[in-house]
Image (cartoon, rainbow, N blue to C red):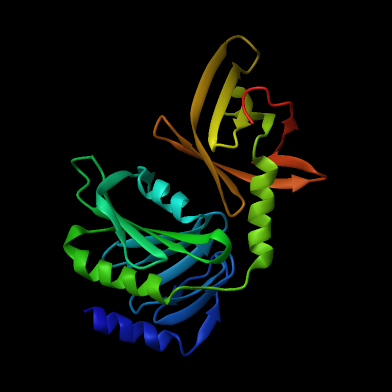
Length: 276
């Protein structure tokens, strides 16, 4: 099985295609994925589609097995910490580490995960592929346990054939955004249904965050106060808040006239007295 997958991917190396957002591609094919800064092989009978802010999705219609690739900025120690944590898959399923971390070679690590939900009998794998200058790609795989050997062979072939392309501009953008957000204290207002929300966020240099939310019912009749903590990170142009409460929050971030824009809401930067 693994030999067939390798031969299929070898064929894809002959012709390369620059991937476009929101367009489906069917393997076997070699793809250059600028938003990830990689070139990779798409195996036979697999499809690929990339959406802004959501990474690259690989899937099989007949099996419903899926792989999601996203860019990270990791050292080896960052990768180990990441693989020791529970994670959320694209469909919202929370999975927890099983067995140990497998070091496939000096730059590729893998770990098996599983949901604690009795009804969910599917399995998950997470690969971390380390590249130059602390560039990395994380590939989350969600699949039927019956396809274990085939999925591991396919996943291994994909990550082994994956290569990092020159993306100094992409890497600089990620670094600049992380540096911009690190140690920041911001406040912004947004409307959520019948509530007016004031969100106040502290992003600490140790990657912890504190989020305080004050909701006021339209008309100002009553207030709801909420406080969340967790770990923050940056992927592509998104701020990801991985909460201690088990929920991930995704915030699209951009800058305009030197001001930060969170999900189309202008932020006001204040002095950070809670953390650095």
